[in-house]
Image 1 (cartoon, rainbow, N blue to C red):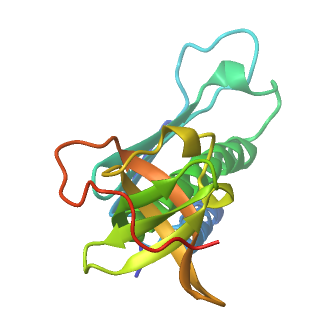
Image 2: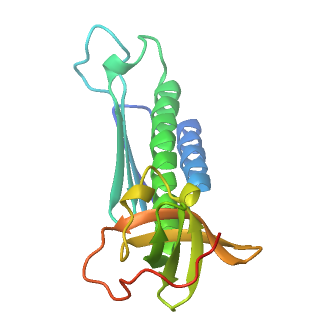
Image 3: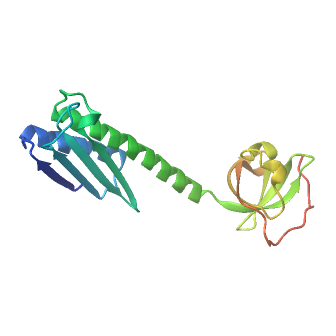
Length: 198
């Protein structure tokens, strides 16, 4: 997929080299995020610029679904006096790339979190340091207090909703990580007991 590029150049010479540079920079962004829906680049040379810095202003505006925007603006005062337009453009795209990478990482983390299965704490043995989860399908999964993320083990109660990752242990499925999703409310299966697991 090629990112749609909207290019606005004012009071700056529109050379073939500049356009090639811009298209290369936009193509590089697509390597980090393949679902950018819009990229608008504005390059201008304001008639009034400060005595410090170069005369170029570059603005990059990216749209990333579902509802994210990344906007980077490089003003004349952000650069050295003798930086040419290609340097200013490169610096602006470098900043946009950094923000885009951070956004993509956050989106991946959100997807990973949503894909983690959920369960309820069915039984918990605080003194022994372990318990059992009950999945939405009714399976029971052993967990040890060391698999609980943070210092949440002592705060767990029957009915606490959690997200978890699991593996197959010697005695059956067991949770490798347990993250609290919500505190216990009115839940079924609130009795502890049943078989214990050392």
